[in-house]
Image (cartoon, rainbow, N blue to C red; front, side, top):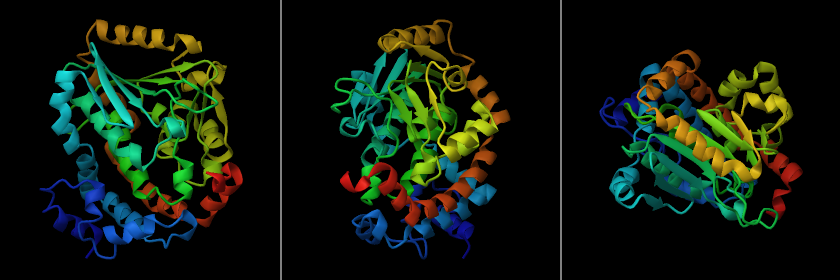
Length: 363
């Protein structure tokens, strides 16, 4: 059976909406079982047996077909069950603490804080699910018009009591084998794409990012799907793809729209960085403020966005996407990404890069 035939069988011809992490464990021939993946997850990255390559190839084939690929993308844009179960709690209490992610409502604004303080707000298997639930809750809340994404306060000795937007993927967990290949796809097809496209079928809002200290890797990728980016002067923005040996999410598709093809290649292939406050960073950042003025800038921007109503905001976002990144273009990109990222994730070069550039053996 082909991948599309298997997909049709598992989804009852499209009548069922399976998330990606449900689909791969629903009985697809030649894909690893949950039990096999538990054993694989216990192995460090350098000792993995390559079971996830089959997942990458299967998902790539599903996404390559316009019909099944679009169905899968829309399935991943539906709100999570946990978010549907907790939205009433959020509406009544005005806040929900999900551990690695925290959401609260302030008037017509919703605030999402990524909280992984011991790892400089890096993302990993523990943060992924709560972050998507948090995004869903902000999108589902009917009184919230604008959503803010920012990093929580960290307890790192170099930055005690400071906020950091995000350190990208948790490289220690990656090296130790505790991050599955599916992490990349569930992240990009899930909460990142929900920020960009909203919930299926028709719920989206404006998003603001507040970048403090730095936005590395996946955190920098988030800036490509935000409607407005505020950055503290001196904040560093970069995609360490060359030193990691993996594909930086959908940045290969999106970053050239902001900085041009040449600068995007420099960032992805050669490690170019941007620093908030320097002239060329205006291509990625809408406002640069002093570090102590970020909260005031957030409040002013939210007031500006909500004071005259947002009746046409979703329509304008959709109109921009039609010209920049229609769903079918994204589907094709993610098909290629699924196959190639699986090979990058399991490549000996990734292990070597982590040991050389991050000295991952020391954690």
